[in-house]
Amino acid sequence: MKSLIQLAAPFALALVATSALAAPKSVAGLAYEAAPYYATTQPSTPAGTETPYNTRHRPAYGGPQDGVARLIIDTTEGSFLCSGALLGDGLHILTAAHCVTDGAGVLTTIGGTASFGITPTGSFTGLLSAPVAIASVTVNPGWNGDYLFNGYDLAILTLAEAAPIEATRYDIYRESDEIGRVGTKSGWGTIGQGDVGTVGSPGSGWRTGQNMWEMSAATFWEDDTVNDGIMMYDFDNGLAANDAFGAYFGLNDLGLGDMEVVSAPGDSGGPTFIDGKVAGITSFGLTFTDARDASGNRICLPGNPDIFCALNSSYGEFAGDTRVSAYAAWID
Image 1 (cartoon, one colour):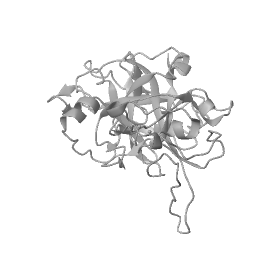
Image 2 (tube, one colour):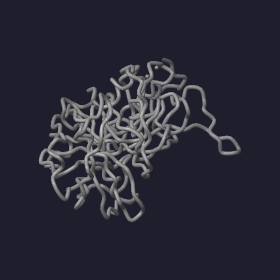
Image 3 (cartoon, helix red, strand yellow):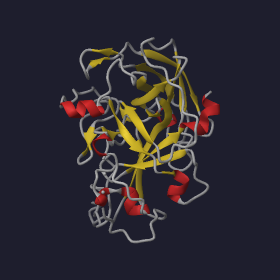
Image 4 (cartoon, helix red, strand yellow):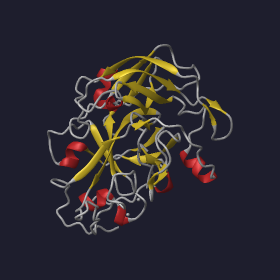
């Protein structure tokens, strides 16, 4: 998405031809840059009003995505913005564990609130609900802070009272056929465009868009010890030169056109829906880096699909989501 980045940010989206990377197709041993997608809180800024963009990437207040929560998480390290999905009882929100813990997976949350876009004031504008206090947090017991390989990046927030009745409640997706499926992403993170990356402040817009998971993290890293409950996708712009899965794995797919998005900071914990059910939870972004010059500046080598060779929710990057179906028993 265009933020989702356009998507982009946890957070925008996009597509490509040719890769100058040599066979065999693999990422094993390559240097990478990765980050979870929470964001420090800042005032939100007005979103754009271009009509085709609105139709594609701005959820309707009071519409089927109004159960996607805008979370302010207060921790011992500061306040952070994340996203989440309201579950069926209206008292619990599914989000990412890294939103509520430190880098070692230790719970640091001391409070916070959840708000929902339930009141439309126009076709693509609206008001947030009054914030509902977060009463307690339950972190998946497998979480240790390692979102990239270990996974288990899930937490459940218990609200002090039920969310507004107008906010949509969601069931979770329970099938195991997510790879190769197109999902609809939603989050309150930083906005942007795939050809420039993130722009504006964290939390500057509620965005939606689509992408497709192309393989599990275990397949991605060619390592059976990596958690299969992590699903990987890339941000395409329609050009082979920026098709990350094509460049590194020979899986050529130019994406979903204007509907494609990628996550950005603040989208963490936000849902990806299949058939209206929560199938994925936004976790992290990832890109592979090239050499640096004597001053430490990146040298973007020919064949690198990331247009900036840096992690900023731009075309040619990868991202990972937590596979909700793998944790259905724990969520229930």
